[in-house]
Image 1 (cartoon, rainbow, N blue to C red):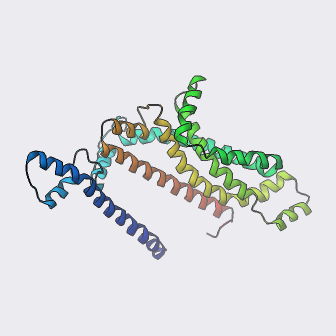
Image 2 (cartoon, rainbow, N blue to C red):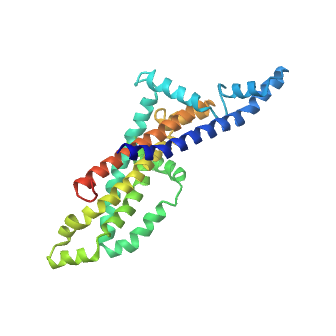
Image 3 (spheres, one colour):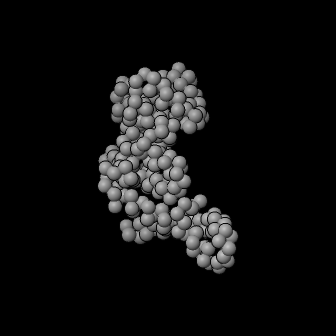
Length: 293
């Protein structure tokens, strides 16, 4: 067990260290021009090492160094009240609430569409192409329209953002469930027919259990996308709370450290949700006897 964890952690650690190293190199390279400009205006000739060191502590860098982002996250996560509008926990909670609602709606919609497609040949031919085509529309283009339309019919608050999350998250669930529901071997389907099983019995006793691994794999993709959808939904609404609002505020005032801290927190949040769905999927699949414990 310990060796397996070590084997899994080693490549992740190496890649993480490589990313941090490249991040520092990128920060020094992109922020160096400002240090040269400052030195030129002051008429001084600081050493190259001194200018590189200064690039790590700029107030508004082009690319903040990793330790600046970490410091901002610690400051706005642990040193601020959760109810404070400067708290990343507060903003992450607002984005997470709409994301989870959209994820739940998207998962339910995806499952229902998959069942309809698998059991109805006409829907298989007519609906599936539209589902695929719906994902070719850039979410940045359609999000403002969804917000405006829902606002016109009186739907405001959490739901418009949840609808955009649902729009993104239903697709992987629908595709995965279609694959999963069609995954039983034909011999098993023939066996169910010899037992004179109804469509409902075949669904609950064969198709649904065998589709669960596909469902949870799809849900891992959907939950991450739903978070992206919630963040994107906050941009056209001019929201004042949420990770998207945090990104907007950072963009308005040139606070790149704030922008990057929100991005890092969003990625950590997405990774955590994916891991949780993975654990849930493993637990359910083991309980169903679909994988070995």
